[in-house]
Length: 222
Image 1: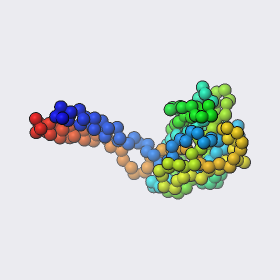
Image 2: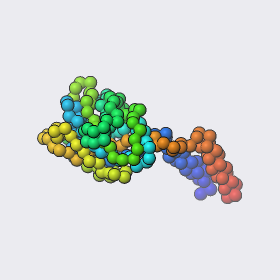
Image 3: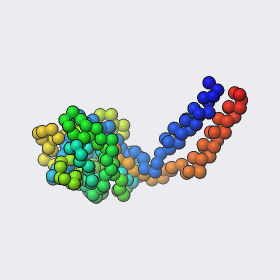
Image 4: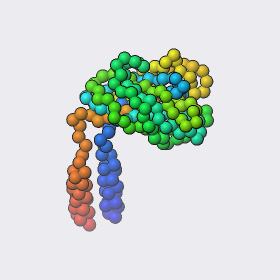
């Protein structure tokens, strides 16, 4: 038991340091990717919009991740992201073609790759309230369709969830048919005005103090 005290303490320290938040924090989460219910087209002129709530005070949106269904071998390069006061319209706070990085792809029961798509950008600064994030003009080099994963907000963790959803004239589904849709899987990231992130020096001091306490405990036990 004594021989395990220091390694276990070091592991605890590493886990605590790994949990230190980055400058961008989660602002809104509509739940994890489902991957096997359905997904909705976000190119070929189709638009999907989902509501989201800002509850953190004045916040600058700096990134987004969402679940995408793709044909095997395809990679999403970019999509147009725009944020508005209402479903697919109203006041436009942000409208930009965003580059996305693809990760964590797994094949679903319909033969699609279901991937996490993450993009960072200089987005709008929003006060508390409800807004809409809309996706369209998704770009695949070979021109294949791109679909936004439907999860109906199951497992969402944010105030105001689950999201409402809207499509222009309803939407083409990934495995046939058209539908006026439930909400999709996505997370928005941002920076909250006035929030602070631990300085590197503070982290080092915390680690030094923690290890000092561990060393004292080890001496006492031995």
